[in-house]
View 1 (cartoon, one colour):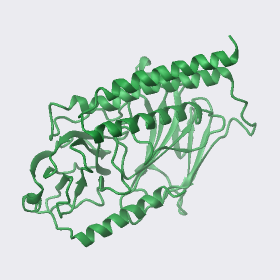
View 2 (cartoon, helix red, strand yellow):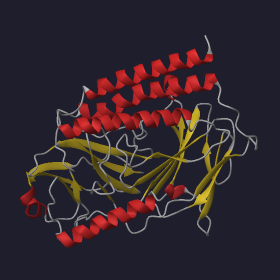
View 3 (cartoon, rainbow, N blue to C red):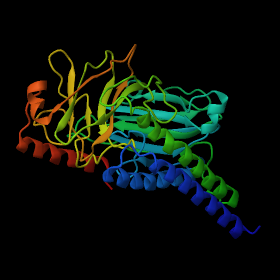
Length: 394
């Protein structure tokens, strides 16, 4: 078979895999609402881009660089509206050095991620990690972190034979102070030789890997919300896995809910954050497990932004219409979606939030939350956009 024929055959396999995975996902949408179907098409397009990029564009561990793994145009797995996600290819044999500045993120984590084949060996997808409270930072705000199989002093992530990806997560606590880390990564073992040309074997393997990831990720992301169909508007159980193999909350845990609301209804959620807890946040999004448009919608709150009452409890409000109070999370024109609360570095059992559906007009009376005027809300939207632009500046 000629190289061109082999490439054409591989492309047919990829297209068939995309069709099968995509049609199956669209046939399992949460609702028949137009917004969910339209966002399903966009979600499939995003997932195709994500899996192709991860297979082709970010796989050379000898010449790694950090790229934006998730963002406003690539969403999956309950991506954090306050987050900035970066990724770079690594391996389990070489030594990699990450240098950077601390920035202003409220929560940061550096993670090693294994190839999916590790699951057959009984290993979790996430390996070693360094979390914000443990990061050693110099007096000038700079730091160095090493990834290698051999122990290093200071900030160090142990890698193993399954290690394939280095992940960085930055979650910003407030809208008025968004300064991302300035980061670089280098393979200290590989030297300065330029990359070799792309071979047919590597291209075929990358395309097949993208197809396998698409077939794995689409049902995994969609399945959690489908499974919660019998438990609407309540948090039935917690996830229970502190390092979910499909993304999850490495270093913590989460409680999730699937909500369904009429346009004049609000979901009121009450919970007391656990102690200790290094960081927590809450987000609302669609039935494809994507966050909403976090440049223009209030779809996330952090522990620094949310209003807590005198007892330390937080009351959240999910509604399409503005209830005129603090702690509002927009339904963004949706009748159904997901709500997730993430706790970082907790101990013991997680609190399960209590939920109640009330008319939007009754939210202020039912919750006692401080009011927010239309003028103040408009300023909040401007601050939201400024924070987004600072996080995702060109």
